[in-house]
Length: 297
Image 1 (cartoon, rainbow, N blue to C red):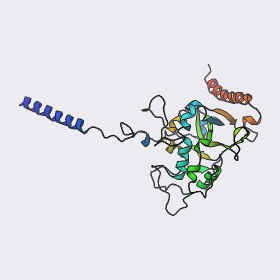
Image 2 (image 1 turned 180 degrees about the horizontal axis):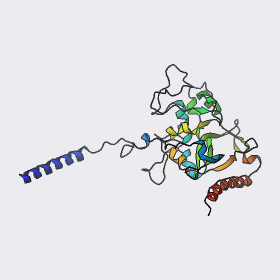
Image 3 (image 1 turned 90 degrees about the vertical axis):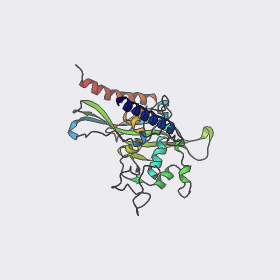
Image 4 (image 1 turned 45 degrees about the vertical axis):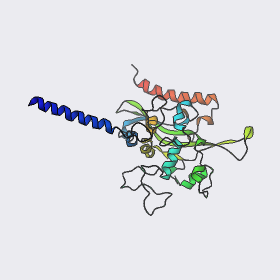
């Protein structure tokens, strides 16, 4: 009887395995498996920070140049390829509510300024701001005008040139947390820096002007950054998200400003050329040395 029961179990197992092999896996025509991990990602939460925990703080502004090789994943592809897109393309699409996971705008409200319905569980339509104080919200038409596009043109979005944003300014706070006994940093905002030729002049006489079309409040942007991956040249199966890049500091940058008594002047207001870069290194080393000196024996 036991042999008969064992034989029956083996037959059922073989039949089940055969049916599974015949059924196989349905491909999604994009890859050999459905990519479900990144679209379901959420930003790494910040722990609660109390004012009394901060013994020292310094506000820093730094520039991330897209022309540096380490920063290329943030710049390419210039035109979106499926779910892959550059940082500027992702932000512009998020402001217009063109991402699949975004909620509809609040019914009956202004389509240019409407925010997320508080009862919704989807990520909000992103707000872009005029300056680093995040007070005045820019409309879609405002952004188009800042990129030199005529808002009356029905194809205005396609006329925006994302490749013109060749730098990003990062506003961040470095602070010493006495509860964790370490120097930490949190990003407050990102500013797009656009380089565009003025007028119709080309060649050696062309004048390139750098402008700052908008600022974005980084904590509002993180839920969107966490759902989109960037290219990994070493392994297509291990894609980091935009949020990973900023949270883990996988980018190259240089300091251009620190908080100071002189109206928060920039380094290049008092130092030029290579001397400005040396001054940036001095500021960076001061922050590094502060933490090291706390643990000297």
